[in-house]
Length: 78
Image 1 (cartoon, rainbow, N blue to C red):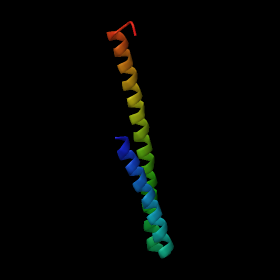
Image 2 (image 1 turned 180 degrees about the vertical axis):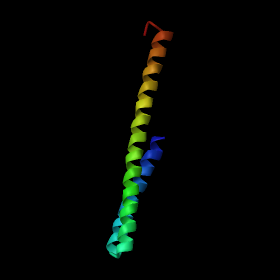
Image 3 (image 1 turned 90 degrees about the vertical axis):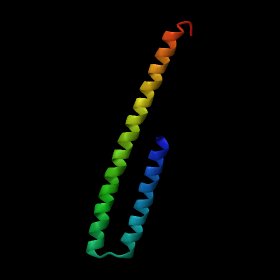
Image 4 (image 1 turned 90 degrees about the horizontal axis):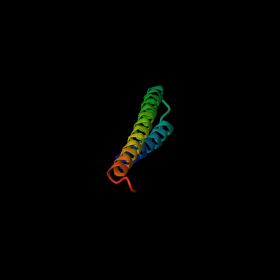
């Protein structure tokens, strides 16, 4: 699942790079407005991606903690 997040973040970066190319190519108001909106949406997506990655890491930490508790319960000598 982390690989998907990494790939998603890479796609977002590539999108930002493309936005810059589009922005540099034509400065007409329509293109500028569309570019700004796309940029806003990509920032929101990146923020959501980060939130989901943090949630995933938190859940993985909890799973590992619970596994350790279970292992100690099953074999109290360890």
